[in-house]
Length: 323
Ligand code: SAM
Ligand code: SF4
Image 1 (cartoon, protein in one colour):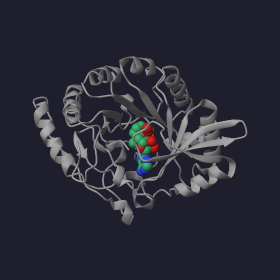
Image 2 (cartoon, rainbow, N blue to C red):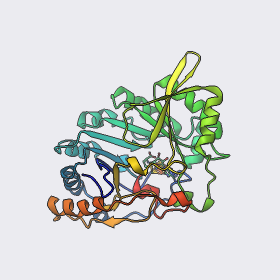
Image 3 (tube, helix red, strand yellow):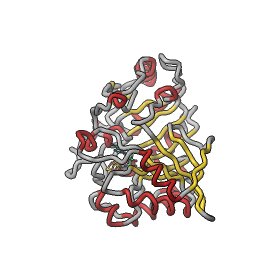
Image 4 (cartoon, protein in one colour):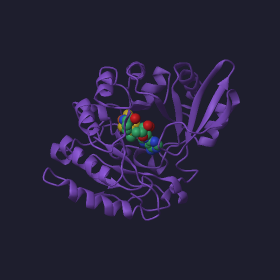
């Protein structure tokens, strides 16, 4: 459906859990987050009703995220249930990839179309430092399994922080080009652990300049995706690949915004860069029609213009909302 500004809202990002097996410095507190009682997290049945209601309003693309969505038991089971919902044409997953290797094939069979895998370093020590103990090898195995399972294009998401992983830009570019993966650099957003200046983000125009020191970039359009990334073909000698830059801070993309987000507790976040959240108050007895009418109102009132234009921070934890 169209929101009050005439934007066609067809994309739902759904966080399945706030919990994660990694503790990325900019995303999760070192001690992790409090475990919520099970009934506070949307059950698979509630998710199916929710997606069914969203599809009645014109949502045709769904992405599962988290926290780490693969920490939810039987994700392929959920994928299968959601894949059967009429009107859902594309089902994708954002994951840290560390548990993907054992389940990529099952996810693909269940109806998952593609994955984005977050990887902020290709040096195992830098990777472990950022994730506070994460094992790079598990993520590399996940990437390989995703390719083998045909969950393509496999996109990599990378956040660059000054003094932390700037030196990873060139090796990650090389790795992605060699492996046929689409690498996307994402500007660090001032929320959660990254709020309050605790982490020094590397502005994306600087990241792009670093890339251009070594690679020739030529703008491309038409790469499959739902978001505000600018994509380029990167070439260096015989090697070529695709690289994207996602500029949530320095370039506003409200005009083309097509999405809503829902947290694992069933709260709708119509804009990532603003504080508003609306509880859908879903429980096992809530009908699809009720969810649909609550969602309709929230989408109609989806705001325009975000706080980051004024360089404010926004409330909420990225791990609850899902990025
Ligand atoms: N655990 C999964 C993963 O890491 O891909 C899914 C959830 S994670 C919150 C989704 C994405 O949000 C990741 O690519 C992560 O790097 C990104 N992210 C987390 N905090 C961020 C922040 N403050 N600014 C920009 N991106 C952030
Ligand atoms: Fe976990 Fe993803 Fe957050 Fe890292 S970015 S702590 S992998 S939810």
